[in-house]
Image (cartoon, rainbow, N blue to C red; front, side, top):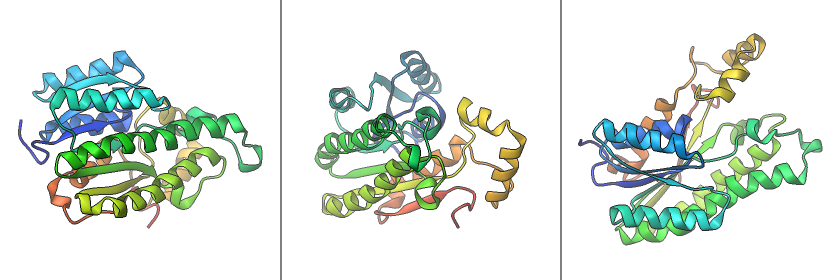
Length: 255
């Protein structure tokens, strides 16, 4: 297979399902060697096998982003498998739905702590341990998958919104700090993506769906592939002069 990511070696966190799975399969179709990772070994192996069956290259490495040692082992396994690392996609996160997120005055330390452990600490650890390998490869790209909640705010999603806002700020800081190392750091701010059971259950409510349709100017919602194509661009050499940017892929919701 050949394509826009020929020669790239990418870790895509949270790639056993949903948006991450879409990114991993699209990266492989565009020529990258992909390290698939997540906590579900069965789903992870399925993604690995799906990519290989289509003629791509992938290796599954199980990891919990909330555990520092798992992140260290993940990055080491990627380099050991493919000899280098050029690309990091930080997609893995605990969503507001999974957290059972709460309004601001009701937020508790446990909920906030769980969000911080995976969504912020995990992000920091992935970047901290991957970036030296990107430098050794002569440069590379970090793509952080954020959310429109960090721009617009969403009532009741206190912990999730806080961590995605932190991701946006950290992305800009990393971009400036590592620009001379030829490492580009960009963010994709996602809107509503119909990607998993959580979203489907939420949108099954006609009143909620009607409300969301009013918020999004385009007459349809996004899919994982919409995010994956944006990610391909930011990870490719086509985006060689793009860093510290936030690309909104949300149907115009934050326009």
